Figure 1: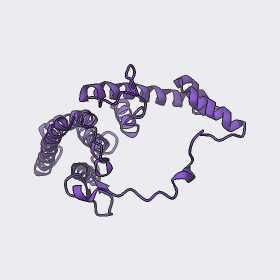
Figure 2: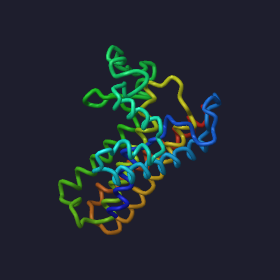
Figure 3: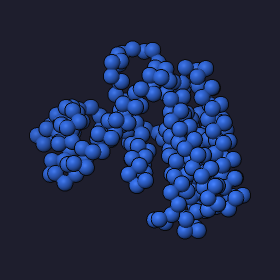
Figure 4: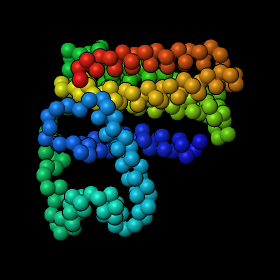
Length: 248
């Protein structure tokens, strides 16, 4: 359980390490958008690269030349060359710097898509409505269980699984949807592929919730409300997949 939780959490923390790198075998100059199946293949490659990166980072975490050793192990030759340039007194990056972006205005969401592709939370932060909904569902259940001491070490495995999978589903939804307020050139294939991944974790949370219900380790009404919220998010996710399939 602990090992699987670690793997899931690190996937959530490093969702798309290779997002800006063209998928293997594809022409980076090809202007044709990738479909959902090409994106699924690419995201699996990204997962594998993320796993390798985390293993290499752990291997060299105490090495005095950690960044260089990681770059070499990963085959990131341009980063290795950039580190050489930095040691020689040159700039770390050949083009641009953080100063180039200091005068840029803050991103503002498209006002024409408010309440459809974005809303603001209580603190004024922009989210897709479904992302915010899932966040509130997972955080609410997590706090409910934590206040009752149900999430301590040695607690019910299925209860932990139910909450963890719901939280990761929220992260996957955010990765798919939270750029929509600012994105005028939406990649339907990418969004659908990411939503599929969110559905996987939603289904696992729903499955774990059924086991929790059998054990009666949560108040029945509270658990039923949580499960209903998960099913509602699932239905809305499927509707969004249909919407973006039509755009891809």
